[in-house]
Length: 161
Image 1 (cartoon, rainbow, N blue to C red):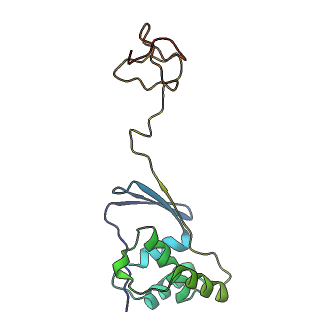
Image 2 (cartoon, rainbow, N blue to C red):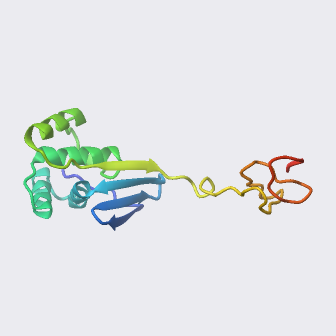
Image 3 (tube, rainbow, N blue to C red):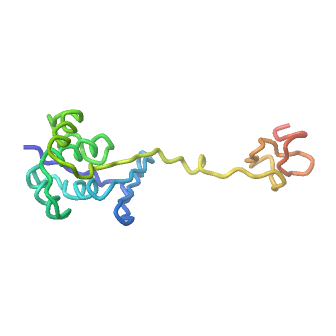
């Protein structure tokens, strides 16, 4: 029986109200989990089976959920790289899980939103026209660090000349 295991190595988790923000230090991917998905993730310790995770999540959320719901959440967590895929062999496909959950529940679905965060160099803000610049750091928004006055400008002779 599968025993899903959260991949916590190289992850930074922060609770923000009813959501949990997760930043993956290896892939530079940020994910935001709603309360339901975060509760399932926390229950995936590699020792619990799906029925045990379901019971734990049901108690934590204080409402009735079933194993299909937990299976859908785990499937989404695997797709987001937050649960090790090897720990969940042979799970039903996402479409089948959605069909099962839709047929049995009218509750909030586990939601996971992921984005690829920019590298620090990509996240730098460019320098506006009139800002001081030089040929070593020509990060002008206009793309022109003027060689005559070392100021970002919209034109003129630019570094590199």
